[in-house]
Length: 155
Ligand SMILES: [Zn+2]
Image (cartoon, rainbow, N blue to C red; front, side, top):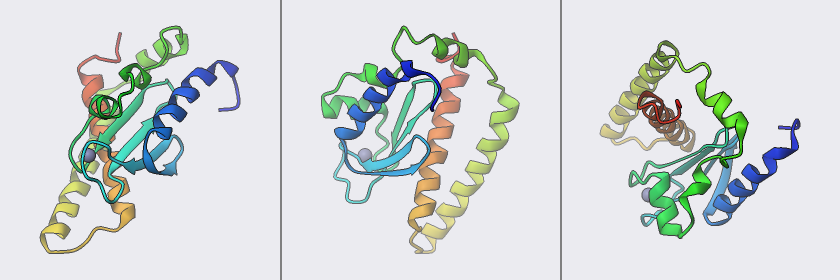
């Protein structure tokens, strides 16, 4: 984070996205949760991840809204979800080290966690906030893997 100055454009975009949302809470490096603007959200169910390559992943695990849905609802340009086109580090990072053999075990683990969560809910348990946050991150990881698999970030 401390290295190069050209990151400022990306962080301005990130600040812009967060400033449009309510009840924003930081849950980790580049990771936030907030109230989803696409549905009547009482507890933050929107997960936002700012990736180092300038891509922003947004997913609502309440209503399933994507980053594009959220931008549309907020009236902001969806281009904020992607790195500026002059960001050359994006291209370099997009091509390196995607490997299905690394991603699949992580997804398998996430799937197991989802099943455990579903069982607990089925038994009438309420999931702790930390579990919900983990599940939000799991959804983002799965979404991200799907993007990679479609080659969206690849070239
Ligand atoms: Zn939502």
